[in-house]
Amino acid sequence: MKSDMKRMLADIEMEVAYTRSLIGKSKLDPRVMAAIGKVSREAFVPSDLKPFAYDNGPLPIGNGQTISQPYIVALMTDLLQPEPDHIVLEVGTGSGYQAAVLSQLVKKVFTIERIPALGDAAAVHLRSLGYSNIEYRIGNGYDGWPEHAPYDAIIVTAAASHIPPALMAQLKTGGRLVIPVGLPDMPQELMLLEKDDQGRIYTRNIIGVAFVPLQDEDNASGNNGMSR
Image (cartoon, rainbow, N blue to C red; front, side, top):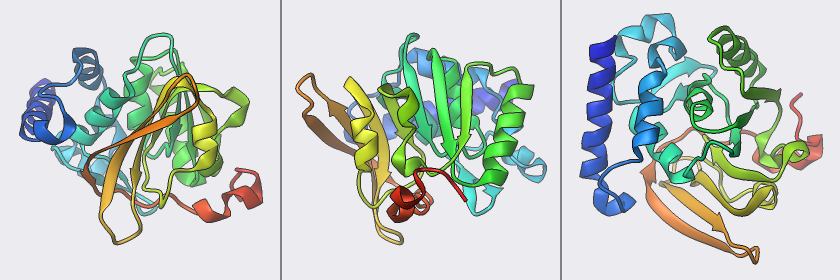
């Protein structure tokens, strides 16, 4: 596994170099790369796909969802500029891999998953692996998790048609939101949003991406943010 992990990290570094003109940097934060190197991606993919766990590409995890490409996980984590005292919200737990990476870098991760089968399995799995600073919820992440707001950073791992207002409201002054935006079957852009001390929002398009859609976003307010 060590050689596979090294290969994956090298592939991430190569893709960062290849896309440097788009993402505005030629390398990622060494702390982010170290966190990626500590988390076994193999532990978060289905058993029949473990031979491909360290390939630099997305993989299906069931229920129509995927575990993201390692390069994208690393890039999105880097864009958050995580710090050891940060409280982070993740919308879209999926396999739990992104939350596991973030947990190496911040004080606390709150993660929401819309699909109970995925969210419940990820929670059990992450606890079994010893990740103790992650709190879980089954619900519709479009409305965020207001009880623990404001957040130093928010990451969304599914594509929204627009920026959810609740997430912007729950972002701390000086905070960062990283989210893929785009309509189904249309080009998507990974976006970085920053909130200044006057509450003004600054946005930047980072790179084209392809994510599964953020589920039921238009109906989120009708169920108070909770799933079925």
